Amino acid sequence: MFDMAETDRTRVAIIGGGPAGLTAAYELQRRSATHDPIVLEGGPMVGGISRTESHDGYRFDIGGHRFFTKVGEVEAMWKEVLGGDFITVPRLSRIYYRGRYFEYPLRLFNALSNIGVYESMRIVASYLKWQIRPHRQEESFEEWVMNRFGGRLYMHFFRSYTKKVWGIDPKEIRADWAAQRIKNLSLFKAVWSALAGSNDTASLIEEFQYPRLGPGMMWERTAELVQAKGGEVRLNTEVVRVNREGGRVTSLDVRRWPVGGYGEPGRLAPGEEPPPLERVEADAFVNSMALRDLIHRIDPPPPPEVIAAADLLRYRDFLIVTLVLNKSDPFPDNWIYIHSPKIRCGRIQNFRAWSPEMLPDPDTASIGMEYFCQVGDSLWTMSDEDLRALASRELEALGLAPASSVIGAAIIRQPKAYPVYDGDYKGALDVIQAWLGTLENFQTAGRNGLHRYNNQDHSMLSAMLAARNVLGEKHDVWGVNVERSYHEEFQVKRERPALDAPAVG
Image (cartoon, rainbow, N blue to C red):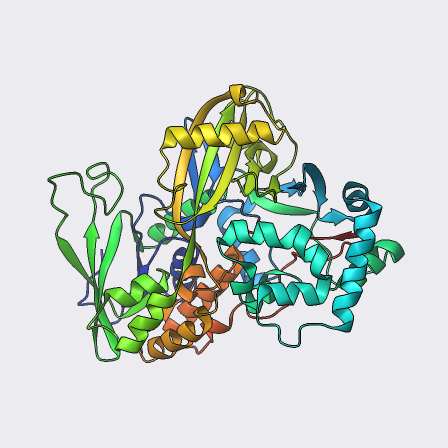
């Protein structure tokens, strides 16, 4: 498709076909008629963690993906790509804690009635204590939250769920993750807003946009548009090696796995040989691969201290068990957060509440039971049959639907879903960032490409800036989504004042 002899054209190789990779390709074509992107995606479909899988006609997300942003350029791209295929979805969610369902975001009087007057008074007393004697250094997630909400509220609505999501003690999670994911609000402001009806912060969204066939629809359409303009999107194409000469990347060695020949890309059947390597040459490169993997695939290798830094980066993995029920929706929520440590599931999706078109049969339900885990642990290695049984039992234990109502299931395992913000990550990231900055024709973007817990829109913005850097502009891609005020997780609503709780997704 590309003629390297055409010296007036610039070939750009993009590693990864998720939101960041495809946005970079789209932005290059939108801004330049002479830059030809080739997107190399290791999996069998585009979209990354924002893809939409399907099974027997039932479509489901790999976690929920709302389309809400304050970034005008991102919103403009959404509209350009999907236009009238967006629907407006009302937000409805709850938290399951101590055998009760709390409205989410937490409504003041609903929370008081569920948790009791005595415990509510203890929460207020704890808040006042931490206002008088706060942690002087906010180094951990725990310290950051306690300083703003007190120890008892932290114990109730942060500690157990955060440990379930990340698999580590919240004391080991850095405060900058809290600052990035939780609105910088205090308990006093939230309660005052609930009583007075005033608010000096942005409103928590009541509704959001959503592609009628799921978020994967956005990325499937983007891939089609990129190819229609002469770009290329290769699936099942694993980047095995990133070749460089000094401070310039010259090519990628890739392995193109046949669809259906070896099962999942990269996994060989007994006795089978892997496909031969192919070389993809380009003038510029944009990466969205996980940084730990990227550093180990660069040849010649980076300095030892860069490799050591990459080895310190950690990830949290994820799997979803999608259950089909022989009855219509057992609950109206988009999703429910499960804070109970007795239930292994962390969050539950109701896919019809996102879009009725996610289901082929209106008399059934499609429920996504999400589990946070690590590759190789007991959850990850559990058989599909046992995962179906576990999810069915837990759905019944939560009082949502009997296990006997389950008539089908599909399981998706997603490695490296969330970059971990532990005590080592920031120093390691600084070392990696500094070294990657010495590569003159190489950009990195996206959630795993920056090791930053971005939502979809900020991953897209980082890719837009990376593409513009390829075109000769100078933007700090690493500076995207470092402000403390973007996310809406702890905001107070004007119309229905409430205290929100932390979320993942």
